[in-house]
Length: 231
Image (cartoon, rainbow, N blue to C red; front, side, top):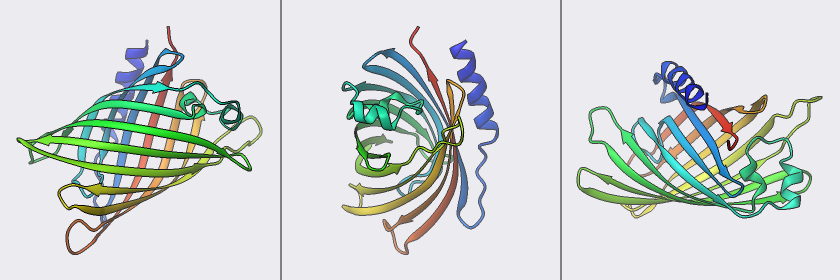
């Protein structure tokens, strides 16, 4: 059943995931399937169209393994209606692999190492700080980049329904340019759908200074998150 849900969702997102080029605006679909392994670890499989850090549009697919600390009571109160139970943990450490395919260019193999901290804030806000390293090998060449993403989220209550609007900013340091070259700003909302499904709809603005002149990019993203419990 879990595998069937994954493939049906992947086909759906790939069908609607054609890039729309209009004044550098793009539609960026993504699918994330999370499988709980035990109370302190889970597996994620991701497939997405992505355009990050000045890269061209790429198809990215690969797994992550996530490890948690024990949940905090204050974080559990803020995230009580959130389907993502990792947000109730003060620290989540992730190791993952991505295969990135770019039309007309060599593919990239990427190792991703991530540490994400969560903090409760008044009145009822959730603050997340993600530190991530991308280690890329492509056509015999190695490069790396460091990314820091700060996000603030506020769950709402509309009768028995609990969407969660959020805003975030992410900055990149890239080894090939030896500077902080990209800033990405996001505004979006999480929409839970029953027990297992969640839609993440967002707008993205990207400013890339890696080459002259600067590039201003805009994107509209739609992510389908599927949270599967342990058997």
